[in-house]
Image 1 (cartoon, rainbow, N blue to C red):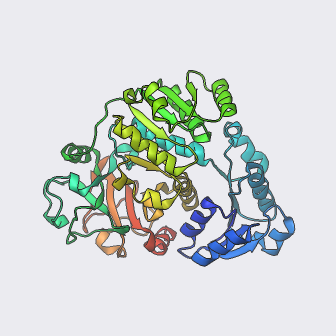
Image 2: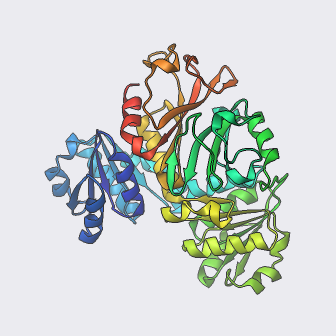
Length: 447
């Protein structure tokens, strides 16, 4: 596949990294030579200095030979025009990043008029992910699959009695559960039964929902929350706006703190039933005045990672049960567990996951990037024409670093062994490390 990414910012760089690991030929275009140089230093991609809106530049690239153009510049309008021009010049498919809330209700019309195949909105997708995490009953949460029957949670190994110092195969009472990923000293391990669990490990555990819930009850540090009724949101940007709107529609009380007076006026006019507070969200006196300790959850979604992390930690110390921070730097995502923040959400990872799901087609029911993209979890719906159906997993010759973590067969969740057979209609979850990206792409291409 040939893909052109227009816009070499954080999202463009992440997409280039995720797509360039396999047989996809990636071209990155941007007008900033310094940004392009950084991309070229780290990735095996072709770089082009120029504007995706220039017809001659696209013609020189032979855009008609490309399978996909992804426009992720800072301008919504520019992205839409780039996609429209590329499609008219013969590019097969197009994806545009469109973030303005005023466009969010008109996506279908925009797609039809501009001939855009897919629109992504990182801020809206991030708000949806935060909302999903808030409504879940645990302070830590990773995801669910197979319409909720398969569940994944992550734990600090030291919080699970009887885990540390043992081989995985020696751990008792984990029937119906698989330790799918170990995060250790900045590295991803897709473990086998012989691997030991170390004290500082973070474990991503997948399995039947009831079994995961039973394991969660043994966790020393996991907080169970019955209902979220009151949420304080720090940051009134697009994510804060979308999140407040969504929470209000569910009957949840929202206090939104924003320092910019003009933005506060906009939020007050457009968000009914939200208490908008104009002030410095890092001021502990303001937080106490607004009774932060009575909140069920605190969410930091300002434009500054450090501020989000600092204030979510402060909220935790003040007694808030569930805290969520928006972070953009992958280095921060990878140390969240050690800092004590319950959940970190990355708009870049969420959007990249969304685009990867679209690229892989309808058979990939979901794609999740974990730990700044160092690991990937993909849910696939098996179809009768897939080469591996009705074969034992032992015959699939999955390479090291890729495992099938769980299978949903007619509503029954199975932790697979070598003898497990995947049938048409089954949903199964693949876990892989980023360094096995090429092998994973080959697996998907075989569909």
